[in-house]
Length: 412
Image (tube, rainbow, N blue to C red; front, side, top):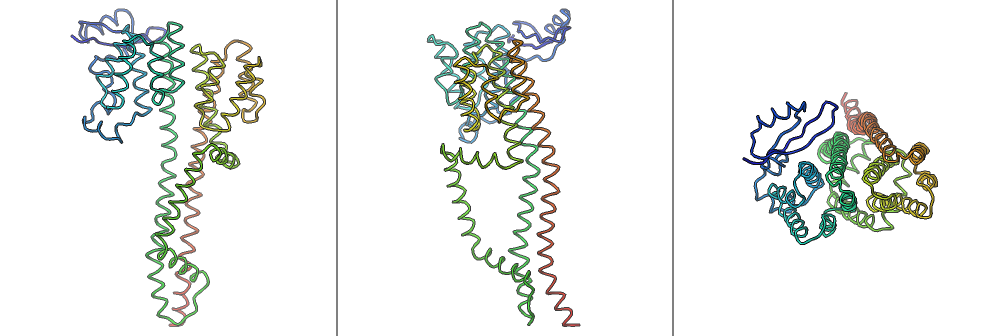
């Protein structure tokens, strides 16, 4: 029989993980229940990883670059599987081997096989990961290094898995909240474009058959429609080229900085971006510090991973302050970006020796803050875009019907 893995909870609600060989599911459940454990999940080696749709996908998908790209969700699943296997007493090399048997993506499979070979040749797990920095970032490498040094690799990987899973769930919520406003805007712009290209010219031909002076609004609409029909491809090409050049400029160090300066001056965007950055900062810092990574290394890793050039510079200055003997609170207090609430909570955490717990509370606060902001944004954006579209379509209808009223008066 194959090895069976289980996740259960004791009477105190604490998670218990393990595995047994040469047993059936029914026998394992009976033994766990006899120990007053509540079974949460049971799966075999073959089922490990089968929750991912990728394990059911046809193998040829792995040959396509679109499907072969290693995604964050792949790493999240890999980390969770590792945590479960190590907690069950499986060695790290055997764990990687088991997981690699479930992977369908050629690119990820190649990485896992290299990890196994590297460890068999004497490298530690974090050293093997460091050979693939394009896949595993500094957060991964340093947390694993910390887990190996402390002998708590399974615990650290479980902590990392929870961090990655929270991030995945959070990204899904943000994306879901932005989908409806985006669809509404695209449909609205499409409707306006159709009216301008198809409907207005039809009425323009009708009005040309009458010897009347057209209202200014109608003339402007007809001229705009004519311009758009004649130069639509030119305008589209110009927009694509401008967008491409702008994207390339923003990818440069100076361009990214300038884009952030402009973005942080936009009220609603500033509020949203700031909340996202502080949520990610506090989540990473709490995970790193809780796992035993020294505060200086934690700041260095966060500096490299933060999605903001300006905030990265702030974190760099904080790191230098800490290096010179100042507290984390003193370093953060220098910058208005970190509001008094987060500075005060960090100060309390440092004083009572519970910095990771305080950073977790900061993370929870900003996570709820961003989710609330998205709900508010959706509620505000919908009526605003509908009102805007209503005004534009109203002007178009007015521009069309004013001449019709004039024609009917002449005919009457």
